[in-house]
Amino acid sequence: MKTVVFGGAFDPPHREHIRMLKAAVEELGAERAVVVPTYFPPHKSQGILPFAERAELCRAAFGDSTGVEVVVDETEFERGRDNYTCLVLPELKKKYGDIIYLIGGDSLEYLPTWKNPAEVMKICTIAVAEREGFASVRESAAKLAARFGGDIRVLNFVGKEVSSGRMRAELFLGEDSAGVTESVARTVRERGYYRDYADTVEKVKACESADLYEHTRQVVFRAIDLNSAHNLKCDFRKVFLAALLHDNAKQRPSVDGLSVPADSVGTKVLHQFLGAEKAKRDFGIDDDEILEAVRCHTTAKPAMTVFEKLVYTADSTSYDREYDPIPVIRAIADKDFEKGFLSVLEYTYMKLTAAGGAIYPLTEEAVKYYLPDIAGWV
Ligand SMILES: [Fe+2]
Ligand SMILES: [Fe+2]
Image (cartoon, rainbow, N blue to C red; front, side):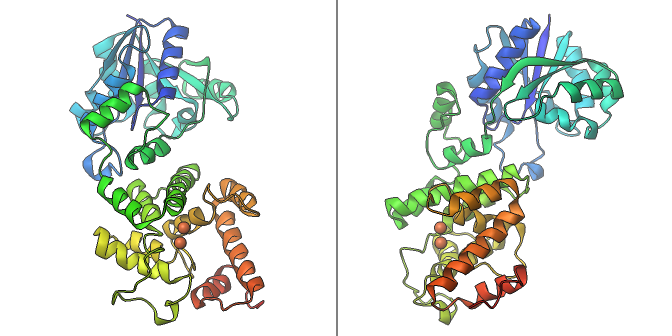
């Protein structure tokens, strides 16, 4: 029985996955689809929903969506380790017979970095879908087939660019995600999946006006997007929490005896220091990476980590900021993360300089560190 095998994290499985699988089944004339959620050992699962939950969501998502029998396969979970394609595919072939392995165009790029690509190509035909906004994969498919042997079939289907990180963030915020089907949304609701931070989200809402909370959620989305667009490899959950909490003290400025720099009291930058202290006190955050990113999200500082730059840049280029020149800076950050970060710092410094007030020492130091040519213009 001709079977399409479709692997992925499926965190969550979304509409675009379904479109792609359905198109592959139709184009390839398959009679069965096997969906294979990838298994990550617990210590490598960074922000990923546990296997059993993703498998259940796959059953809800793919169920009868393709017009042929769909099996959600648990081979990777049962193996539990070393789930390289070259080891998993032979098992799937044994189980299902005549298989075609379906991958996205972006995965094709990484094929040479897989373990034993030539082995993988011998096991079965690979079907690849193109993606909107990306160069055609036809040429690279032909090159890879020539290099490693085997057969790569390029589908006529062109996938849309969607972000499962964005969907995950929406679900974590307790919102509906348009990217998932109703049956996935229902399962998520009924089972309480992606509710890990429900209490934190409610508390943040209680600390922020509707406008400020709207800004907060746009910073969350922005940070998640920048992290994945530039493959910054920051931990998803930490990015989510730092962005969610970055302004938690903005509208509750009472110092309450917490430890903040004396020279920040009464200034606009107080809320970053207080935000870190209150994230600890009120939200139980004890992760230094998160706290430090909150602590410098307004002023910046010298020698920032990628994580700190991410939160800083996401805050200043968040999607709710439509005034000049933010859309231009946002576009720069979309293209080049480091340039985007420097543009934010430069813009902020110029704006503060033009306003003529005092500039907080940490900002001065950050400018001296990152933009020595413009430092000292005041
Ligand atoms: Fe802020
Ligand atoms: Fe903010």
